[in-house]
Image (cartoon, rainbow, N blue to C red):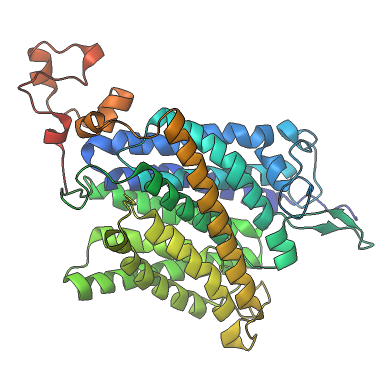
Length: 454
């Protein structure tokens, strides 16, 4: 293979995009943290930060190798030892950017995929078990599926294969530009499985479980939208036309989805809410992720508008079907990811960088069936494996906190802290110690009584 010259512009774009995607995980922590009750905000944010810390380490140790090592059989798994500890990559420049820039970029994808799952099990999961689950799930589910979707087969100048990648990208040839399958369908299916394993929150459908801080939700949504330009445009892995197209498509699809969600709320409920605006933003971002390089800006608007309506309606399915997906990971990420991935089969145009025509542009159903097979394959595998992992942990070390602990509040039980110190002088004046600030006298209000609701 003819050596490629290192391009400082591509390198700068890759590193900048990685930083933008990294910011999405704290943004997600704010988004999720504002959506739970006040007694759960710290735990909700800690689940994202815990994933950030843990997956960063695992990615370097063996995760990158499992995802992007040479395939060891049937397009299912990269060689776990090829890049163990990132050996051999610190001086690798076989692209227009250093290999370590790509390592960093893909690391933050792995991090946020794990963090996304946490929204489905808010208020009721042991933090220690969550970290154990995160490590197992990333190893068994995410790293292999990332290989399926993101690892492309490479050839040299003589068309000799030098690297074999995953089956969805290379054999099925389904299009997934930035992670509709590997990230969003994967996390959404896993969230559904864990919600079923852990069961419903105490008081679900009976007690108000409204977001306690919509300001945090809006701030988190804004950071997610900002960071998502690194997520999508960064997936071009160069500072060129594909990145620019993906940037514009991400912008307009997200705007259309937010407007469509608000319109759906207005027609259905009589009010257009800030929570709906923020949720619509995320739904649009999810849906355009796989399609950002394969549809036109007009196609992106259509894709986003449909996503806004579909996801706004889908979040109500949990009440009809009886699963407690606390923060609508299923309704937004699973449904949005499915629509975004499958819609490529309808809306893709050869005028876009991907160069493929969908059904509406005269391409027939060839790309459509490929998109459907890729989407549902990831859904089924992720759901089954996650359910088994979650069930194993629940039956052995325990995954859900006790009823008493849930009523008291997961922040005080799991972290010995509260998000809001609502009565510090009163507590100190009545003999509370700094070392046991999460405990109160019997006649003082508990965390659940002090809870702030929107």
